Image (cartoon, rainbow, N blue to C red):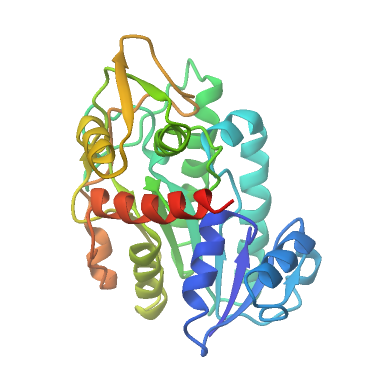
Length: 311
């Protein structure tokens, strides 16, 4: 299978590229705005010349069986910095992929959406019958990311004859991610490495952290299944609440933390108490997660800390 990876410089894309590298029958072509960086990354990983890396001007002239679109924002600080430009960014590269599908209707398209497409209200986890909620008369900066993803999904459902599957990522964690990123897991890792005490808020939020192996299984199942126009949510065997996560990180890695009534961290897309999904629609694509959130976090955190300690 020939697969075009759009946004190949993103970390989740690179993790998937690494997973695909174990299947020699899969031929990847990597596209990004900075192809030189991707080429260097391939060389650093010991894969010089393994996959072609180009900018988007070379995309339309190729023949692909599938497109996977990772273009977007990878962490809260980046989302905050992009602001309303995320709307144009998302539409630009989604349009690039859709234009290709119009002339290559047999090509599959996987679009990386987000749980944020449901809106900012997560008093309860998302489910099969959940409705998207947008404060249409009071849109704020933290809404742009959700609206960009929701609009893209609406476009895709309107093109019901094209093989497009949107995958909503809620929380993804890998040991390869930027440890300086401002979200809870990375705040925890930095505190462990520095020995400092991490201050966290009293909100006992619940998250579902999918890891690289289960994400690869989900994407592979989507590509192997019969073509369809659909949307699926990422999930693991079980989510984890913040207090349980902190206790586990203390037990396994010696994390020191304290709880404060003062909010901590960056809130780029709105406070989401139960930011995970009970929608198991991905089962129709053969997806069966192998791990729960806490198992994913402990495994990937151990690898991240080992790597950081060698620097």
